[in-house]
Length: 92
Image (tube, rainbow, N blue to C red):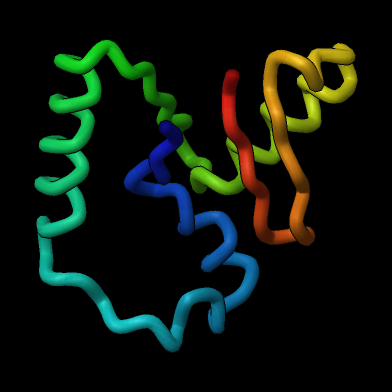
């Protein structure tokens, strides 16, 4: 499971003022509180998760998928770069 970091969108928003401008802002604290509950449940279930400071989840997934492909580990990690902005990744 990969999560956006709290500051993950700031770099892109700094480069493009229209980035996510059309999305309504979530209720303050809602995302953080729900993410904390999900992370806690994952920890208790033994499911590993990743969150990289300053990064959005899709960027982390694309980086992992690209690294796996470069290392020839396509058998361990199935991935598909759907487009420049979307990636599907499933660990086996």
